[in-house]
Image (cartoon, rainbow, N blue to C red; front, side, top):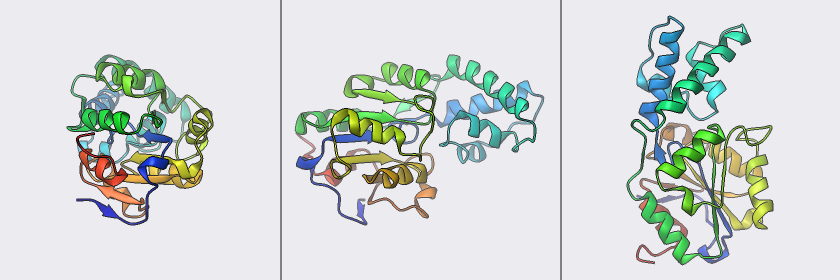
Length: 233
């Protein structure tokens, strides 16, 4: 069910729609959890429950690994663990990761109905695995840009990535919409002056309670109704 908290821009006015990746376009929870627990096993530590690891996702790999390690004092421990994590995840990133039902249809409908609107991905996941995942899962053809957590000197919720996309497309904040599943995405949009749809089906919807978006949806198909794009467009 769609819950509208603030007005969104009209579909006709949109020039840029920016999607988060994990928890918004794809369910990568199982593979991220496996990579974290493989890293912990490599370090001789006990595995963590899936729900605990999932609550750490969203702020980039370094922060994910640091949290899983219990925020150790010595930075070299985190650096070594991140190196192992990335090596493991590079091989196993698509073992169980899949596109949420309705995502590809929704992206295609947006492209048909709004031919002057550009679609992009902005994630805190490193850019190379992000690009490879989007290519393998047929998301890439819909996107004019895929930016990751190491594409810029700062990550979300810093607005640099979103502002770069706006500059590249000539879109104003009023012509820009972000879609994500966490408070990180909401804050990113707010920091850039853009609108934001929050996804209740993602990896971190509980964080949307304290950082409410402009609109809440329960499925990718509801993006279309929220934006004002016909399902059969």
